[in-house]
Length: 252
Image 1 (cartoon, rainbow, N blue to C red):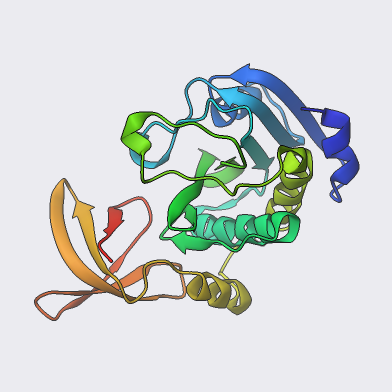
Image 2 (tube, helix red, strand yellow):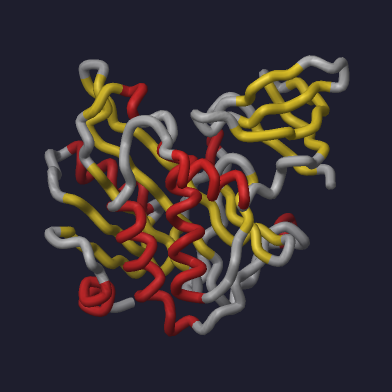
């Protein structure tokens, strides 16, 4: 991977770009830099990760050099409530970048996974670095299966690739970074929400959701103004699921 090619394709200025052959996790590496006082806008990319992480403490398989493993770091210094929609906005941003570079359309499985051809092709992990009640930095990790990927057996039938030319890798990294650097914090704007809803993989579907280890079944019926998933339970009651509280499995 060539840092100068990525930088050449970046529209955002004054970004510190770091490219690594291998790292445990680009998000973890980013946090280590923040912890020693890094204040720059950061773009970190790696050819492979040995300890990739997903939401809720899950591992994220990320050892294919034909894939995108990257992290963007922004320093908004905002109250926590102004960053709660960041994962929703990030999913839309990454989907836009993927389509602009590869021509492939993706759907969003609430809240942070992108699907193409019925398979998961991208995961997004947003993490906040907070001090004194304010979010000082936001770490946004993105993994995209671009091409020529092999997966462990447990991911058969789940993970897929965009089936694109690997030569698009640096261009895609730059496009994703530019979209993420352009995110607006605060309330989600209607354009972003409308796009998120149009690209939803779950609205209208039966889902299983897991809360405090307990499985529940419902129908996903919409996305609210904060990016929450509106559901109708089997007893006829409505609820709103919030990011970070639950995991969702689509039944069909």
